[in-house]
Length: 360
Image (cartoon, rainbow, N blue to C red; front, side, top):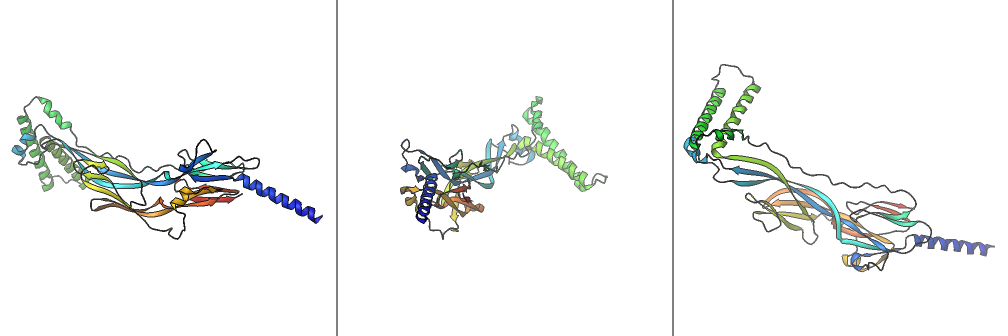
């Protein structure tokens, strides 16, 4: 009787082992070693970190006045716009991160035919990044879809009012217009002097005094621009994407000059904009497989995941440090393997790290 019971027990254990083995039977290889069309399976990738740099730039367009020839005659100044041009000033840079598929961490999973029992289910993002894998036990999977946080928007800057240019259409000669404008400027300056010197025997409260002075000052600038030329300013944002590299810790990503503005790459003129990414080696204690081992070996019933690294990122323009911060940079970390047998694994789609593992 005991022998019969022992045989039945061993048979049941063998069946359970075979069933569990069938449920998770698959192989994972590096993408370049796959043979599409000859194997049933799918591709998935781990995410890499792409730095998004939003450069905030002030553009000043200098517009020449048709009356600029009379500026030195009536205003005793030669600082006028001689020709139209655009000047640029780099105000700031803001950094955010974006997850994108890593071509150096792209894998092919070959899935064999499974009969009966639960089946292994892979959850893949539309861009190919893996988000979950494990035994399908009928539960509905609901995972949050990451959204990119907007970093910067174009900020409009108040521009000089050009309504006074309507004076040019009165039919008067440029010399006459220049003389009238110069006289108007002198009147405004006289009014400003009388206001601040107490010439008017009226006790203005501070807010009224400030409002009146600012109004006169704005009028003076408007008339002055008719002789010296106009400056139209606006703030724009130009975005540069950078992919940090283990082999190249410092990268020249753009150039900036006051005459040409921001040009992406190294072909432009001006000061170099460089991005330096230095890992902090927070994961140095991990004994990770080499890249060659990952690319050359076929692994059974295992999936790859990422252990990201924290890095110090510095953005410089010439010798000036514009930004320095610590961020997570996935590709500076390690790629590891996780065994999958009756297990449900959920990945962080921004880093590729395992954030949840549940035994079925």
